[in-house]
Image (cartoon, rainbow, N blue to C red):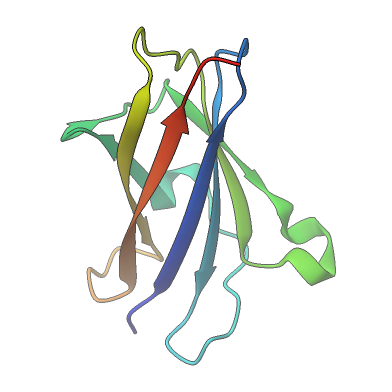
Length: 111
């Protein structure tokens, strides 16, 4: 079962957090809730962000938001402005065929 992963990101000027809003669904398009932090991996510019770098908020406690997650990267505030690409991987269980990925870009500019 391949997962569909869609993400958008934002960085708020003056805040050291990056918020990636990620939606995960199964191969039939059904939202996939209940994923934990261990189900996600995030890379920036080819570098894997470690476990201590981000946390996951499962918004699925609200029925209409099942399958929606906030991945919050702590202390993310690059010194330069520009567009930054993030590779996001989600996996249900241990089987590689129960996974999916996406690319999301975030633009950081001065306010």
